[in-house]
Image: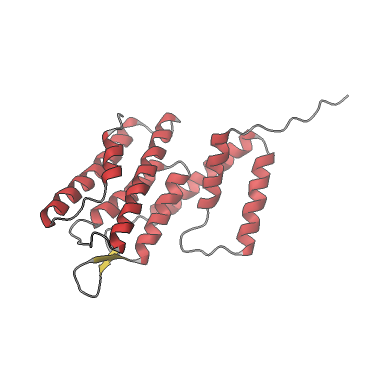
Length: 208
């Protein structure tokens, strides 16, 4: 009598990571059409019913792909912000949306340290800018602050999973912290409100 088939077991963490990876496969400038949606559904079903080793192999391949595309699309400090019609207050550009989408793709797929290089560039790009306390730019900065906190959580999980080492972690955090400190000094000079409280607290509470 043949042995009964046993459904593969996927942990909650594996399922969550796969969901992030599948969402990350669309580059920020690409539109989601019916074909892409169907392919995602097929892939998700295949991974849900396949073996754990298949899911692990897929995740590793997807992360490798994200590393390659990220290396070609590193955010720079140019073009992320511009000024409003009054020539004083900063406003975000579509390039900032693209940069944030890339960062979210990375930390959502468990590649927190790769995302920090993009987020650090964004933080440094805000140094020297001015914005209204209750304006749209302040709201955008609050979103960036939250993204950094989520990326740091992804970094912690990356270290715990043995996918990176402490030397890389310390360098990435040091680079980010440098930008945050520079922002704090700059905002104090012109009397603005420091925009990266959550990120600052996340770094200070993290003992690597």
